[in-house]
Image 1 (cartoon, rainbow, N blue to C red):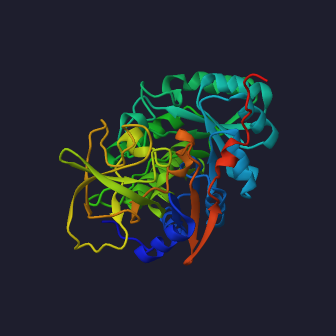
Image 2 (cartoon, rainbow, N blue to C red):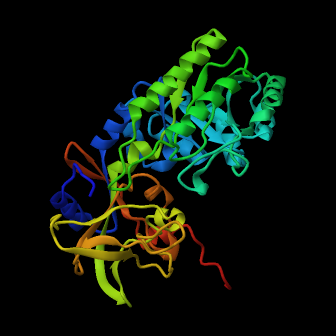
Image 3 (tube, one colour):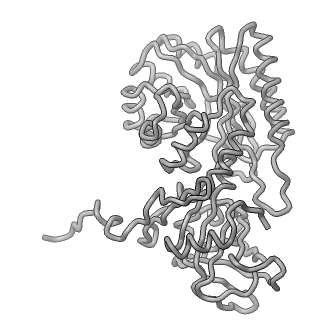
Amino acid sequence: MKTRILDDAFLTRLAREHGTPLWVYDATVIAARVASLRAFDVIRYAQKANSNLAILRLMRSLGAELDAVSAGEVARGLAAGFARDEIVFTADLFDRAALACVVETGVRVNLGSMFMIDDYGKACPGREVMLRINPGFGHGHTRKVQTGGEASKHGIWHVEIPAAIERAHKYGLRVTGLHVHIGSGSDFEHLTYVCDAVGNLAQHFGRDLSVISAGGGLPVPYGAQDDPFDVERYSETWLATRDRIAHELGRKLQVEVEPGRFLVAESGCLLTEVRGTKHSGPIEYVLVDAGFNDLLRPAMYGSLHQISALGRTASAPAKPRVVAGPLCESGDVFTQGPGGELMPQMLPDVVQGDILCVHDTGAYGASMSSNYNARPFAAEVLVTDGVARVVRARQTVEQMLENESSGGPL
């Protein structure tokens, strides 16, 4: 089972005090993950993983900069105190709100489609831009998180680089950055391909190139047998790539890294109360008060999240159990594989009122939650130096309904 800084008694107290479902984040873990990437010139947090304002303010205090993928995320970054030159907007299109936002705020942009060059050039001639390039291949722990190759919508296709540069220059845009990201969970074999591709692609970018972005996708050890990611080797590989390209081009370059889940996933857990147990034939179900409206990753990707029963010793007798939620959906199961197959986890006997801890949920947990089945958003708590504070209050049903009109016949 995962080792934790926050112990069972502390987490149980938080669950009793604030109710469940409950998100809990440990600032100590986030600080350690940021520190592990200090060798990079810029650490740019991909806030889509967790955009709570308290998390963003913590990232800023740790010296990270920010990636945003919508007008709302730009607004969050500014509200958290980031300066506009510390935020980069990355996308494959501008919706109307996003284009208006980048024009007004002046945040830098990372353009992932050819037509975006026209949109941005007409609105903001003369500014500097980055280009996100699809190198022609991708890799990730599932197909849904591959962000390169023909099956990915992301990035300007690599053979279009000369045309993209020419189009940008038509509007007086300075192309100062090259961004390549092939997927989440990439291994070192594929990292070598990416670094080689970046070196080749950089030759097309001309005299204005000053930044290369390694993207994100750094793996997280979700499984008990998974080895921690070799951050030192990863950093050294990218720094060597930066220095090689800089030498070939005859000028200084910066290298950015753009992690999301790596910085926050292991900091978070989802606490949920057992509401009962039941059998369907030989399968024993533990039914809890959190659903995939809270944590979508298992239902969407078949993602593994280890689960433990708080207050139970590791030596307590355990047997395979399926943990499932309250939603009116067969897929509302936290212990399932990529194809929806049940994958029970070893858990001790539990009764109504016990608290389960779903581990490593700091990334793509609260940020992907919804009001499906008319369920209010869960509360979020950040623990700093042993002190817990609510950083998002539990949503009420009244708050969930307040922006809706009754409609219907008068």
